[in-house]
Length: 198
Image (cartoon, rainbow, N blue to C red):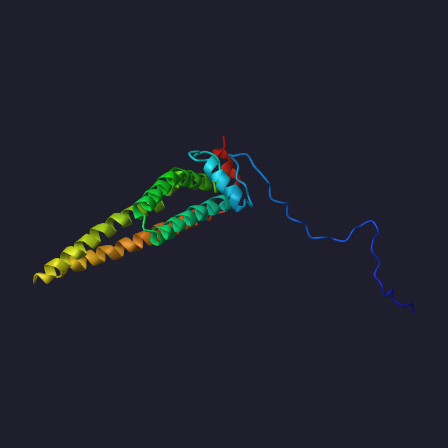
């Protein structure tokens, strides 16, 4: 009776299996192509270089870092406005910043949709909901204010109730628009989106 070999034998020509390593992110990519793994500084640079470029694609990182950059500058301007007495100058700077970032923000949004193989026209859904929500909200608040005046004068509270109801619907539309925008911008990349490159 022979004893089994305590050590299993391995074929000397077969190396042990190693887990595959992911490919490193590209340091750069053509302006029309998305840049996966894009850092903050690179995303801001590509945001400004693509100021009005509505063709091509943008990765999720490019889009969200650009959104963060715009938000940080907005918060800084608002903080500056609250800390200084020069409100007209800060108000002008805030307006100028908002005006300067409308087109590049819209362009990077369209390019982000292209990267997910979607048309830029999909932006009409969230922005349409947000716009209708804002208009309904303003109308509802005006109606509620008018209802308060009528109620104070001894009138009916119906106008105030209707205005508050319209404002509630407006808030729901605004929330739906923001959720739709986040869902659209978080969609994964799709290689078929290359059809939007030039």
